[in-house]
Image 1: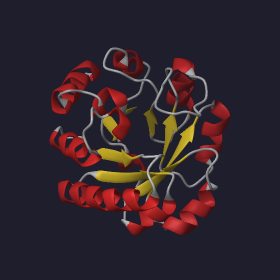
Image 2: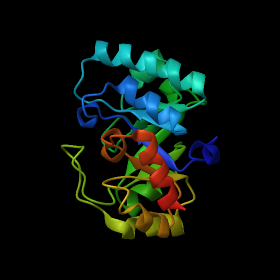
Image 3: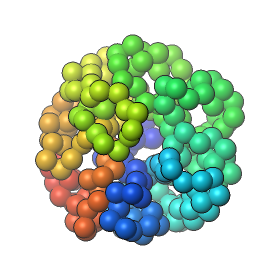
Image 4: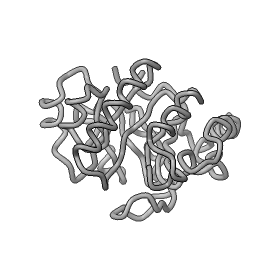
Length: 209
């Protein structure tokens, strides 16, 4: 499965508090209309019932559109709504336990912030890694300092896993990231906070070319 997991250019994440008052359902509908092929549901501050009800609707929308749907951190939620996979961080459950829980056919993405973590990921049963934060980001409270483009270059040259670059990537700096070898970039505020999401995605795609 690995190679096809990130066979796309823009990896979108939800972030309702940055979405100009729009619901995640409205925003994801626009992402799908813009041709985004992988969407991660990431809402840290909602309670479980809200997350479940919302994720269930989003799963139906994404499934109908043939879009991959990943849940951030929450393995129970991913299983209950039959998401395509989960994305976990360094402080979450170990990968082998997550794999046992979600089964062999689901996607596991793992955040990495250093060459050491990337090397460890290769030895584990993950389908892709997140590489970042490349630039400073304000969407996470407990985020580590930006790792810069050097770590991205290390991954491009040394790590055979599919990867998505993440962290503070915007329309005006995405070219730098692509020049260093990233073919898939993750964005939150740049897309969910855009007045016209479809137009924003088009402009980012132009820059990525």
